[in-house]
Image: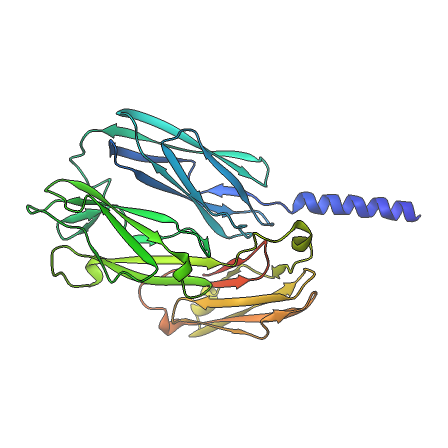
Length: 354
């Protein structure tokens, strides 16, 4: 009888393991650059979502040529959360191209591919597609910057493409640069119709705390320019705890966070009432105390209350999310919560509020 029960236990465990798997989903499998100029590096960002029910790990990302450099989210991506794969391509020859990036993951299949294509030309005359954002007589290829998740000591780089459409020489400058950002511009001065690149380096050592840091920098359109919404570029970076020194045995005995929901849908209630709330139960399913190190909200309409920040193994607590309808505003931005924990498999958890 004991043998039968043991066999049944193994079958259930295997079935549960088969059901609990990460799943890799990309925002697109093929990114098209369109026309790009020779010897002008360009960057594509693939947004990766874990649509499975256990943490997804991108163990290695390999481009198929030396002309491509990749940066990717190296920390585990929790179920429902997102990561990024940034691909920077520096064309070596003129003409059409199609390239691939191989991504090794801890899901089935263990190897997936992302692709990008375009055409390399000597000169681009129509910049509306390559540089869609206009700031005065300057065009840029992005008006917001989301650095990939970092750990203390890392220095990721993001490039902003700039083109001068004015009749005068233009010197690209970002105003109100915080201490954790370093800027390099090539070339320093752009003639009419000339393109350049602003490179922003994130010095994670100078980030004040774990979690999300948000700021704004401002592109000067001319010497002595002022700051305003029309030349604002929003910048965000998320600093995560570093678990790279943990052994496999330590990870097996680490805390593990489990949430009753990763999404809060209060829209039906707010359609009838001025205020709504929902409770999420947080449980430590691991073997060591779970610490909720940071809990951040990003909108005045959202409020949270958390009963306990430290949970012993097996212990649960309640996170209450409240939304005030009057504070949402006419233009509803993405409402979410960010939680930073000491769970090495899920150090970052994002909760979407609908």
